[in-house]
Length: 242
Image: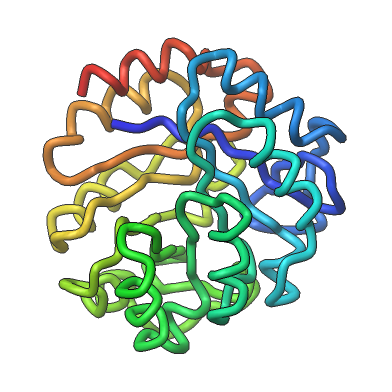
């Protein structure tokens, strides 16, 4: 099971939001590339990066910061945030991103996302962001009437690499991962699932790793790392045993 340390970008700074609220941002640093290197030194081979400004704007807003991360991080960079057209997808892949995460586009134009999944084999991740079981979009500012499982099923056999499932109500709050909902989604679809939202410590990594055989590919963690509640090296080692 892959452990993805997260770097969320707002105005070029490394931040974490509480429940996706841009007005509840905690700044953890002003050098994203240096943060990426710290994660690499702890053993990370995969990194999850989010252009938060881009999520709301619908287009890249932290391009230089992302470039600096890609140039400094020796592993695989997975990127999300406002990626909603073919030019943006191609642009990020050309810059060296390993996988692109698409959320709003997956709900509003699923055929386009499927087309991108065919064109960029193994490179497209579909974000399934949930608030009370319903899909949220536009940087989580809008909640749809589409159940999470319904959206996920639309991408069965579409060639997407993974589903990134986030429980918005837990994100950035250190409440613990919504294990039940994550496992339920993994069992309902044939697409690997990445858990996100609320990791509070090594216990979350342990429980997810036990369930990895059910289709859980990885877990994303941010605030727990920045606040010293989770040792990244230990988490990566635990995930590797799954």
